[in-house]
Image 1 (cartoon, protein in one colour):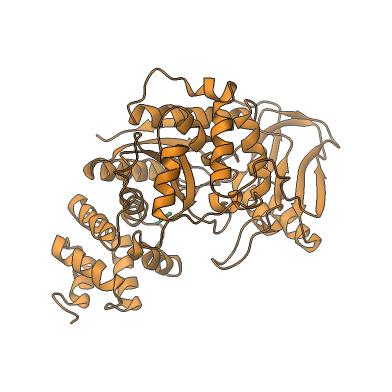
Image 2 (image 1 turned 90 degrees about the vertical axis):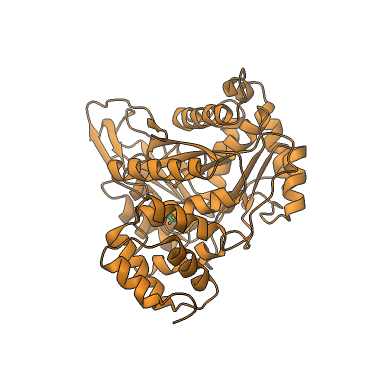
Length: 428
Ligand code: URA
């Protein structure tokens, strides 16, 4: 017994399918954050939640207790409407980079507290850290100042925000309890709600390269998160988007920065532009900003001006040459045909094996490493034409990346074009 309740009683109740009371949940999250509940007890509880779920009241209490485990960010001194975006992560997902300055150029304040990548999807901070001089850590005063001056900030979340999640996510990672919709929804939404934004747009991905591969499960996760956001007074909607094909033509840190700058210059890959604009329109709508078409601010250079100010404000040089990997190995097509499928997961694993991602939290990433693909679904290629360029600082990594890409391109004669955005998910 460690205080008001007995951890074993709480575990057994959830194991046996009984709902937990708000008091039990508040106690268990608080005691775990303070180290008063053993890791093995929390892992048993996480497994019981994975197997038996949480009902709406339990989920609200669990999320509230996670938020209360740390400090909330106070954005009260920000003069513009605040709106944030969260993506569940995908391959080549560089959308935050053009999106945050674009939405700021349209008049909102975008505090984008981001993370580093783990596994086959890259992290936004890793991408931006490939820009010489750019720093991810800001004090709260710097963050508020930059939101008022520039309108957009992409930086690391403070360690005071939702400390319960840092412990619990690490525990779930090693106990097979990540894939639980209530645990994922409370983990993501507690951090987003604690950030103090007035509105939020979620990009929930589905497909081979997504964290939630099954579309019905992704839809349920989206709905659960939207309802949690609304219940906490944050105007929240979600777009369910396709991640069976990687976004754009690049996966890797500096490679993705360069592609994002192309979008900000009014060009860039059609799918990256489509998703950036779809999310920007939703964010502006959520923030109550009307009468502005974000496409205009990509075309007229205003989003690019905001990007440059945002990078400079965090010590970066927007004109500096981006790092390039030492080795580039090209893979060519062995036949003629139309690309029907380009598998996002395979591309993500290849980029990771080339050095763009990390296997453990403390590993470094290689800023220049990654994959560039030259054909997307719908493109006709001829035998001998380049399909992929593999960028790495260590040639010994190439065979493992090639193995990941084996079978990743499926050729046919026809391709049915489809939109990146599958559907819009709102609260019921
Ligand atoms: N991302 C998070 O922040 N939490 C989860 O549980 C899963 C993905």
